[in-house]
Length: 614
Image 1: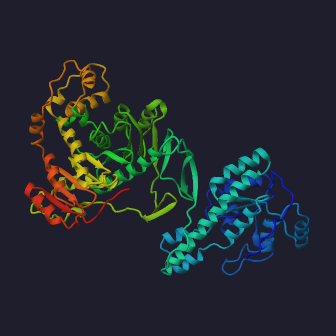
Image 2: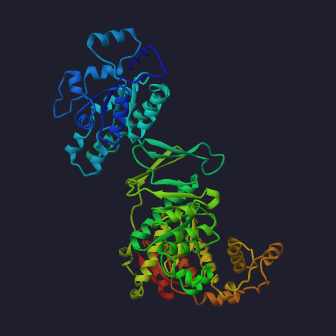
Image 3: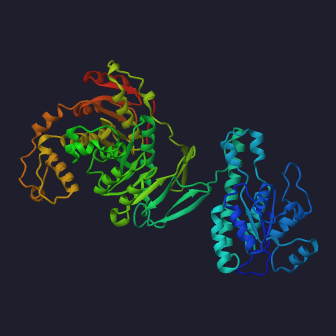
């Protein structure tokens, strides 16, 4: 059994004045400003190499570590700070008579603060460095000083990131030194950084040997608390970033919740990929981590304008991003009530005005014009959530999830569906798959990539017109989404367009009333309240009228996140004007499914890519 050391005791004080600081940073962000502040407080600066040079260039007095230790840097800089005068100055227990005497006898001065960050090992690996270069970027002195300072946090302060500088300066300004609480907090973060750094090295090294990882350590930095998790009783809750990484967004307004952020993360990936794949402005309307609608900027016809309550003249003035969101929101406006929106382009005034009319929780986008931001900040009494994406954000190749004490990891589903995936037309009608059809296949496929599985989606004219999410049976997905397609089509029926609402009936109430008119299955009590919304009580939309209208539907694309195991999904899809099918293929029933498509005159593509999402 290993020998357990006894605690070494000394004096304990809350506030420790800073008289000497050791600085060695690879990230020099704000280091000049920070050290100028320390100099103004008569703090002696010790430093090495490039850091010392930068501070001197800014006009500060800096003592080289080699001068302080009377020992030169050697071995190509591999040995700079590994010296008793450095680690003794960091580890000596203040107020311990034996330590104080030894330090005096050995000429070891106290070092009260270490400011450092570690060699950029992970960046070197990501940059494609060869084995020798990666090895050279394994920091030795940095982690040693980090651990020495953090261990002796009763008296020494470890600062490992530029985002801590302001807090240190504020503490010194108010208290005259660093407090024990701050030193403990920074020490904890330092040890977490050390663990993460060593884990990255161990994972990389074993990968070079072709062996399994001995351990995986992921270190998170809490960014902000959340009111609660999925449900009010799930407290505490919060959002963290991977240490030394940013979140994929900044909060410009409002206070996002747990589900809001899940929606935002998925919706942003969807529209970003749609933009990349089609070259068109894209938008999505999310509810409970699945899209209610998604679309790209395709002009509206006059009937769609009437169904979506916009004049043809106003529609012509819409910007591409505004047009994309108008379409996405009108795929299923009942389900989009209270949505979280995402758009691929900068939000302009036209888009903000559309959002202003709708009941929505928030939006995520790459940016906002001043006019758009001013409009959106007034929504929901100023509580509308506005997120701005982080430019060039890298989510990493591997993603992790914790469930019931288990940690799952997988390669992120970073495949972007494109027109190249639509080349394998397995039915005889190969010429039918033109550019507009390929666009709709891409829209539908990327949409279901971010829909809870099992899922299918129907698209037409650059927009989703029905999404069937989270069913155990694939044909049930088709039936669920098909019902939505049916509703979308029938919202354009002349009798639906002609409904005469009383003045003052709210927009969402009109949406809901039209859907219930199409469905027609009122209870007696419900029908009384429904009829009260109209100037003249409408005649029913009969089953025969619905069938006659739907029989004229065509040009719809259906996409499935996995293969169709039986032809029943194709049989059912034929009721909704489906002319095109896109799916991974790979079922033992592919021949049967292909035959069904031929019977209905549908063109079908196999992408070879399954898109389950859980």
